[in-house]
Length: 143
Image 1: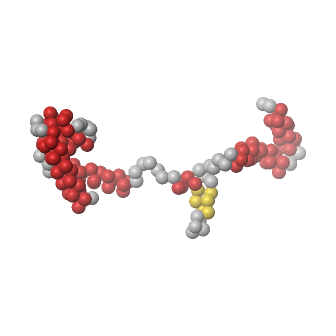
Image 2 (image 1 turned 45 degrees about the vertical axis):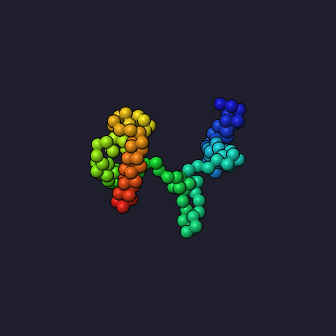
Image 3 (image 1 turned 90 degrees about the vertical axis):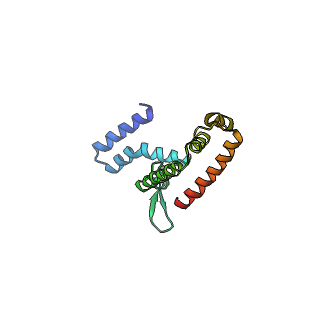
């Protein structure tokens, strides 16, 4: 303990012995009040900082922070969208499926895809554009 803390401890003991509860409470709250004063000086806000909303209700700053986790409804909608995308991909033949997944998921080039599926790179590009537009139009109607 440093000199200031020692003096505060002595004053706390004196206030307790004299039953001076106001002084005792003030001395016990002093480190907390000092920390708050320092935070105000550096403009630090707690997530429990209360704000007055436009509708007259109080809200805390932490209430305005968006949670990165999905709500149950958002999770359900995401799963439903994934099922629809998988179904749309299943409508493609095997070569077109390999082209789409290879280009968008595996980040393969046209020449790599042409070697994988056994067709020219110009044909790969043409089929990629056709199937991408088909999937966009199909999924746009559903999603």
